[in-house]
Image 1: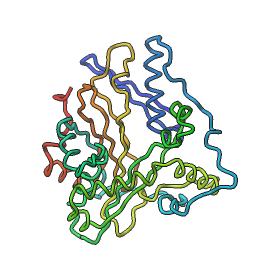
Image 2: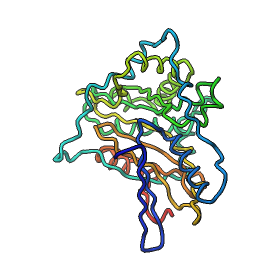
Image 3: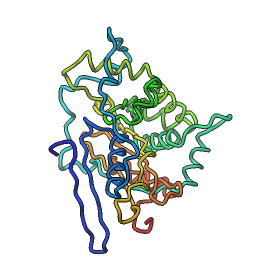
Length: 317
């Protein structure tokens, strides 16, 4: 890819259209990409733009003096080199599949993961279930399974929330938790979801993001990488989950009607998986889930939970 954005429009013989957009994640995150797509649809219909983007980089000026936390060294590292891609003859390489999960199944999963009046979020419950499902494929109980969760900093920087809601850029952190295959296999779902909740809570504060700004500033101009992306020899697997529940699929009417389907696609190389649940275009509470995982993980997930992970097909349109 060259530049921030590229667009491809594919016309189908059945009179339908596919619109594909590629964004450079170094300059924009999913929140900003959603703003762009929604504004594009409004412009196409000659409507005023509901949310004008803000490009105020001064909102992220580092503190003087910087107050970086050592805890960030556990999450990020200087990018000396990118992890190598699997070899072509690797039969267990990362592949992409898309699933449809019914709203009632999501609610049941959330109910199973909640206890004693503590109601965990749907994305936390789903993340814990996926973490256990991936660990179930491991034969070496001493190996480590890592789970990263993308956290949007816009709402966490509370005193700047109004400005940041329209900020066009990248305001993300990716905390992660790790545990052995044996521990995840034997730990009940409700306890695993507590581990996920603690992981997310660690990065869900204004101080975390202010410290991250300082951490980056102290290492300029050297780029950095999230450590969960870098696989260690003792890792069984690693996966990052990002909630795409704010994907405005029902708002993306470019003048010929609302879309029947929409999804992100994120094959980022390396050996770390990536999963993003998004709302279905039907608007009935179902999820469309993009999953970029190793083939054996996807095959086992489909076998163990066919009621939950239904491969997306034209029958869902």
